[in-house]
Each structure stands twice: as C-alpha cells, then as structure tokens.
Image (tube, rainbow, N blue to C red; front, side, top):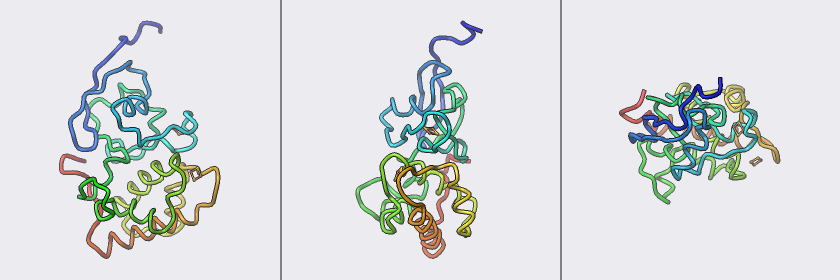
Length: 182
Ligand code: FES
Ligand code: FES
C-alpha cells in the first residue's frame, strides 16, 4: 500500500486544554509529534507498547503514545504529564501546591523514581483516580500493570497513588478533566 498516505498531514486536536495543530506524516508516532512541540515530559522507553513510559491520556483514557499514529489523534483531547496540574484545576508552577495531587504525593511518598517511568506512572494513576476515587491496593497495581519500572520496587509508587486518592477525597481536590474535556 505504498503511497496510500500523504507525506504530511495536519491534525487538529486539543493538547493539555489548548487547541493544537500537529503536523507530520500520518503514521508518525504521536509520542514524537508531541515531543516535537516541546512537550518532552512524555518519554520513550521501549518504543514497542510494552513499558508505559509514553503513556498519555487520549479522550481521558491512558494510551501508549508510541503505538498511536498521528492521524488517529484528529479531534482528540490529549493530555500529557505537563497537563496534569490543570486537570486538577492547578496552575503550572514550581510550587508544590500547584502540582496535581498525584504528582505531589509521588514527591512526598518517594514514588518519583527515575525520569523515564515516572511520567507514564503519573498519567496512568491520574486516569485511575478520575474513574475510581477510592481504589484498593490491588486496583492501583492493576491500573499500573502496563507501566514498568526496571530498577526498583512498586511499593512506594502504589503508596503514592493511595496517598493521592486520600488527599483528593479529603481536600475536595478530585481531579476533573478541563472544562473543554470529556
Ligand atoms: S515507549 Fe511506549 S510503551 Fe514503551
Ligand atoms: S524505570 Fe524508572 S525508577 Fe525504575
């Protein structure tokens, strides 16, 4: 089917709450398209859909952006790790209070380990807490089953997500999609 796709396309979508036009080959990986816009928080681990480092939210669902062709993002609402604070109604800044509760708890509970796996973990955990405000330990582990850490254990990561769930329930800070969201 060579020649079936144009060399370049323009994909209109929403990225972290803002209208965006992503340009590239239709089969280019969404991971690359997003990183090319400067959103380098989304990482490449395996590049084969196995590790979860490249996890983003696509219409509220976690997806491996290394497996999503750019053309598939037409009309989609995308959220990268950079967009998480806004998803919880926070402004992006260096201030801990401006972090998404999941991010803040990864810091306070020691769940933030290396820079490769952490962004994907944060995004997957946020997706879980948006649909389940009070997950069990097992549900957290299941939600993060597609996010691999190659170098240490998962206990602090799970504890971080459980702490974020408690913080969000206690503080009325339940993460909600941006107004333009789902
Ligand atoms: S880089 Fe996408 S799943 Fe590993
Ligand atoms: S792969 Fe990131 S801490 Fe292990």
